[in-house]
Length: 325
Image (cartoon, rainbow, N blue to C red):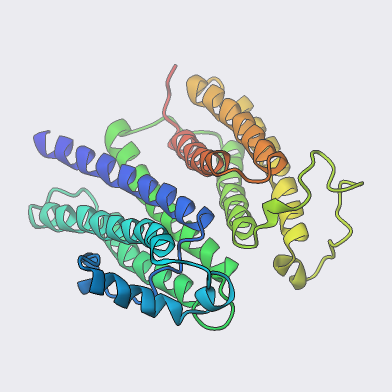
């Protein structure tokens, strides 16, 4: 029992660290700080510049990047330090999160305390893969175009959320144990909702990567209609900011309907989760609308992103089918 409490505490800490990483990652993106460090040094990169000469050397490297040459050539060393520290903190938090997940996993595996080692191995592998994904994303903005690939940005976020889902799912399994089953149709709807939520978050990341929230800052119309004039059904729509915003809006409406149907049908099985699910859906929609209307202020945009994680957590809790009464 004592060992079980240790594992639960470790999973809670790991889940919290992943949420912090998602928050700081979103902040880094909104502050346009992600391309300030132009090298990937997994070991030596844990130390920041200390002396004036160290800072000048780091700034010189940044000056050779396309972002400085095309967008930030007016930057002073002081300006560079502001964006550097945000990206540096994000990378250091990534390393800390990796160690928090990896070292206890190794310890509990050695002690044979894990009820099933496969999810924990997946967590460890995903942590390493996430580090690679982060650099793969940054690298896309260091070639010619001083913007990271919005697809790589979205993949980086989705990988973090898959990792979070694994950790949170194991945490729920340890806390709840055996749970009451849903009927087959509701079980299917719950997993459809989960897939739709991941699709919606992926589209949200594309919106962030393309700065698509900066246009069509009206609701419910986009310009003079519900469908922007730029929208056309083709692969090119994923490169068009207006089309991506349109997809994100209407996928959100569809997701809200699915989640409301799910909440209604599990209200007797998990009453409080159903209430939280519906409440979170409408708060998330409100945050999305306000973010667009006010042209993506950082606080609203970060709240919108964090509420997506909360919504995911509540949905995972419902899928665990815990009977609250």
